[in-house]
Image (cartoon, rainbow, N blue to C red; front, side):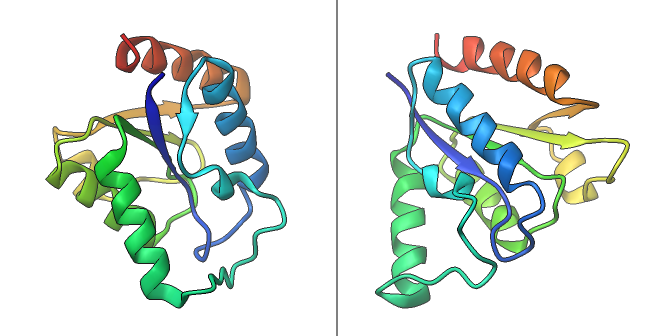
Length: 141
């Protein structure tokens, strides 16, 4: 069982929370453990709080990033935190795959210009899940 860090916008906007939830469930159904299941929690608000505050969130997330086998991100909704997580994963040489709806948003050149990241544009949920399966087949091998 591989450990997956799923990254998606929380404080940057929750418009895609339902999609995150579907992706997380799909990743889990393929026999992986998602360390960051809370990202898909539909009741999680823009003002995410944690008993220990922001330092506690940072400490937990960076520990999960170091622990994970790979990172999967959905980046259609821009998020400073997700950008930080992507760079942190690269620093620790964790494989990273970024999904985004190319007809909705253009990714930052800091992502598209970095050959480290595997970037996949998709048009609809069926397309996304098919591509996600291909990534999981590769990373879970």
